[in-house]
Image 1 (cartoon, rainbow, N blue to C red):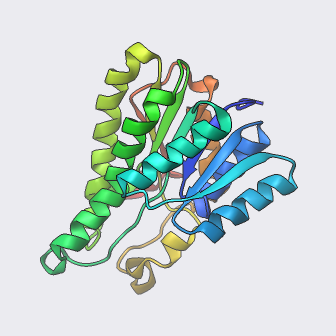
Image 2: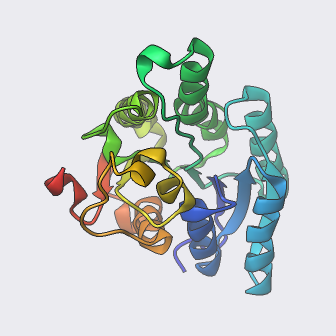
Amino acid sequence: MRFSGKACIVTGGGSGIGRATCLQMAAEGGRVVVADLRQEAAQATVDQIHAAKGEAIAVQVDVGDAKQVQAVVDAAVKAYGAINVIVNDAAMMTFTPILDTTEDDFFHVIKTNLGSVFYFSKYGAPHMPAGSAIVNISSVHAHATTQNVVPYAASKGAIEAFTRGFSLEMAARQIRVNSVAPGAVDTPMLWNNPNVKSGAEKVEGAIGKPEDLAAAICFMASDDARFVNGTTLVADGGRLDIL
């Protein structure tokens, strides 16, 4: 029970990788704060956890809004007294060439994907005791990308740089900060991608399940990875080798 008694915030916990991570952490004794833009999706994850006799609460949040992030942190501390794990999974993509991308659309992606990591780090870390962990979800797009997803790829590359730098700042507090970079995963984000639908982006090689990524995330968040810090675990089934 690697997360027994630990309070775990997971953003994007209402579906896909985030939901799978919530379910595994709860199954391993975690007290999970399921944070999602859609309250009903977050609650559905909580209902699954409760049905399995786990402990969880649902919190609605726009992760690109600092005040709403602070409210999630406050809810976690009020419910569980501290925060032991933060998983920054919530993200969005756009599918427009840069020359056709509006400034508002570009910075909306950056604020949602990268800004959320900053907000949860800034406001969450002060409530995290020694031995805690932050896991930021990057992407293979940080390393090899395709056309028309530049804001997403840029945000994911920045998340990995943020992870490296913030891990140094948190070292004295004994809080580990790492990233996990998924490849192709069987989620709505993959199959609703217009590039995938059109064939512009070929989905070659292995396609992971959300549970595969949850296993990697839970490893990085647990004491099993106590000697892993400031790095990115690529969990892509070998996709980067193909790209």
